[in-house]
Amino acid sequence: MVEKKFLRAIKEFHLINPEDKILVAFSGGVDSTVLTYLLVKLKNFLKIKKIVLAHLNHKLRDKDADLDESFAIEFGKKYNLPVFTRSVDIKSLAKERKKSIEEVAREERYKFFREILKKENLNKIATGHHLSDLVETMFLWFIQGNKKGIKGFKPKEKNIIRPLYLLTKKEIENYAKENNIPYRVDVTNFETDFLRNKVRHLVIPKAKEINPSIETSFLYMSYFLNIDEDFFSNELEKLSQKFQENEINLEWFLTLSEAIQYRFLQEWIYRKTGVFLSYRQLYELMKIIKKRDGTKEYSIGGKYILTKSYQTLKIKGYNKKSLKEYLYKIKPGEEVLIKEANLKVKAFYADEKILRENIFNDKRFACFSIYEDNPVFEIRPRRKGDRFIPFGRNSEKKLKDVMIDLKIPKDMRDSIPLLTYRNKILWIIGYKRSNLFPVDKNSEKIICFKIEEV
Image (tube, rainbow, N blue to C red; front, side, top):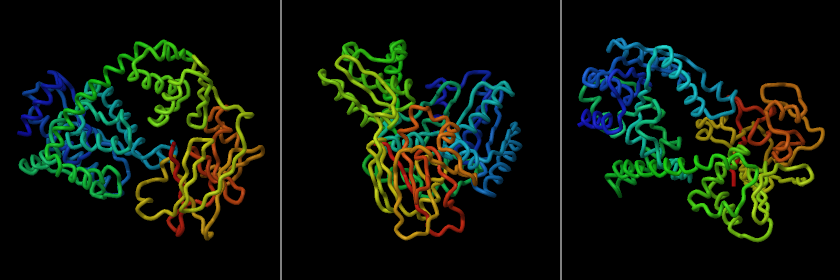
């Protein structure tokens, strides 16, 4: 049954052609080992010319990461396959790039894969994503309110193929057991502190009690949602000239279908400002546009203003005169809305569960080791003469120079809120934390701040 579904996916979605030279993204887990085993077993039947394994050691799990790498090398030897490995300190890179560990890990993996693809003259990358992964991904995006992500991933995207697309995790694990296929187990996959694991182990089993065929239902839903998304992407591409314009004629805009209107707005604003509007923002903006009379201003991301004036919609940056001084106070356990920046800030004491989620590499969080009982923090815009000690340095710099280093556009700098404590800037919110009150292994009381766009 597993091999039939494997071959069905390859045929139905045109994943593999004769003479293909395939790089397998090999983690050493059950998915990538079964994928490799099937490709090797059916290599002649599928007329595959070459199979190569690529393993990236993320250096995230101490000795286990090195054992995974050794396993990949031995697995390749067993099946007479070339194996390429590379070690990358993902945690340090994430800190340096101010991105999440997951995002940087993916970037480095595919950078590595593309290098091997070119060097070895390969033409496809095969990953171990399967039907259970698809369900988890769709659930995750649904929970977080992202309509675009709900469609999940495709069995084929450019030169990336997913031959296990029609197989569930259980089917893959049973096949590995029946065929004595060795694989590595990542114990962190069972920790429900992480959102994906929580969905995998707690949410989906409950959903399956209601619909035992949930994988099949999501498979078909993903198929049709992807068809819809491709259609709308093509329709938007027909309007590509309009994306270059600095203002939109609303009389023309309102002739479009609503399904195109909100997608056009989201893309136009993103191309002009780099701000990707939330669905709540799009909903409010659509309501403003439909009111044909009067002038209205709408702030997006605290950095730009949309101005609707009768029959036109324009984007403009904040200027100093339009910005007003503000001051918000916050204590651990409290939450405040910074309406000037469209941000919600939450302050809380961190526990071990929070710290295990690698929030130190997430630009939405900043944490500090402060021992004062019931400390009071302030949030305000920048002021003349502000100075800041960037993380990793011991000396102050002009805040203006730090913002230049961060490549923050001049017209955005006054709109970025600052978190302060005892008149010292702790965090350029959403961008960079200071070197004050650093958290280390000896920290006993850690106060964290989290931001959310509203």
